[in-house]
Amino acid sequence: MNAATPKKPRASGRGRPSKHAGLDLKETILDSAEQLFARHGFYGVTTRQVAAEAGVDTALIHYYFGAKRELFDAVFLRRAEILNRERLASMDAYEKASGGALTSEGVIEAFIDPLLRISETGGPGWKSYFALVAQVNNTPGWGGDTMHRFFDPVVRRLVDALGRALPNASRGDLFWCYEFLTGSMMLALSETGRIDALSDGLCRSSDLAAIRARLFAYCAAGFEAVAARSKG
Amino acid sequence: MNAATPKKPRASGRGRPSKHAGLDLKETILDSAEQLFARHGFYGVTTRQVAAEAGVDTALIHYYFGAKRELFDAVFLRRAEILNRERLASMDAYEKASGGALTSEGVIEAFIDPLLRISETGGPGWKSYFALVAQVNNTPGWGGDTMHRFFDPVVRRLVDALGRALPNASRGDLFWCYEFLTGSMMLALSETGRIDALSDGLCRSSDLAAIRARLFAYCAAGFEAVAARSKG
DNA sequence: GCGCCAATTCATCATCTGGTGAAAAATAAT
DNA sequence: ATTATTTTTCACCAGATGATGAATTGGCGC
Image 1 (cartoon, each protein chain N blue to C red):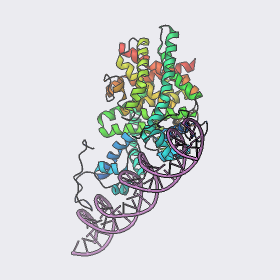
Image 2 (tube, chains in turn purple, red, cyan, blue):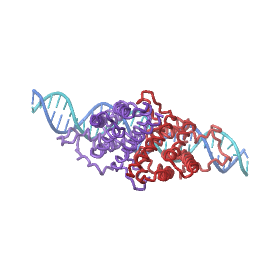
Image 3 (cartoon, rainbow over the protein chains, first blue to last red):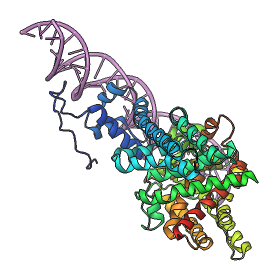
Image 4 (cartoon, rainbow over the protein chains, first blue to last red):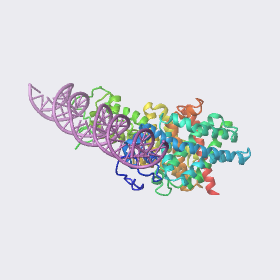
């Protein structure tokens, strides 16, 4: 099943391995779990599948992470922190560079572009991760806690910045438009392949340049239109 | 050999009558399954849970629907047809009424508003259903087939109408912007409750009027901005 | 060389899973 | 009454699932 990832060299035998060949098994497990959870969701993956994909024993997963749900949380949290750091830095940089003259498109670009860049250059694990977040984002209840704790601070930061860029917009406008934005962004980042079929191959899910060329302008215009209507 | 449907569907002749006279047990099962699948996804629900929720024996589910996956498909398809009919009628009506002078916002409203109306007036099952579709929409691979077969025709219709409303937009623009639109729309319709927490209660997921007041204008402005950029 | 600790595997458990075949219940037609 | 037909229940299976405790092995301080 896993032709893409090289199978572990089958340590053949119990006990502690003779030498850490540089491969951190804990990370390997997280990688496998991430990929599988992204594709089939939490309940669609068994710990045995994760173990098989990672080339380890089932018990090792419990040794490192405890229950299955804790493994999932570990997968989710591993990249969340990196994401937040990157995003905050991007928005800091933009706000500083713009010297107080914020544009909605600029703010939105500073908020989204880090994700696109990471998806392009960060390795395949990130693509799985975004698909995972998109799924959690569209699941009622589920990530409520985790999602909230980890991503809301950055989102509030975005909403504040957009409030300065669009003084006419009410706070309700901003929150709702953010909901629209995050729906578009997550669907685009998760690369479901749906647009490939819909467009008969004209567009490809993996074409992040095409997304970049449109998404920022699209969302910014949306925010501005709603703000303008709110003013009148 | 084991057909998904009973051998002679309701010939109004002989045979044991439905236990709940008047209440169709088949529909009851679909309702329960819909609700559970919407909340926990396909793998997060067991046939036993569905049976318990519907108050029937597990075997009855297999008697009516066959395998679990077929039950899921039945849930998915039941409302898809209604949805498509309603949507096509709405777009027909709009195109006729506008007499060839299409606006992007008008087209988008004709495409989305039926869903909002149904969600408001169609009963709680529809809310579950939208949450379900949103999940499938954000799952890689999974709904590819079903989603494609059932919803793509209406979507193509939307894209064509938008192409007439926005002659400057390339076909790629239209497909990508549709991807953005559907991400926003599905997340809004699935009422995940995330915006309630994010906005500290200021906005409520269930406030469809708030969505209507913003989503059409938001998306239309997005399409127009992308089309305008494509032209220059 | 010894003892301790970390890492890894093995064997196994109790429970749950989707699914089935046969029987029972309930009516209509004969 | 008997039989045909449809719906519902019961009992059960073979395999999967999450999880655990014990066993095994290697490295490191001493």
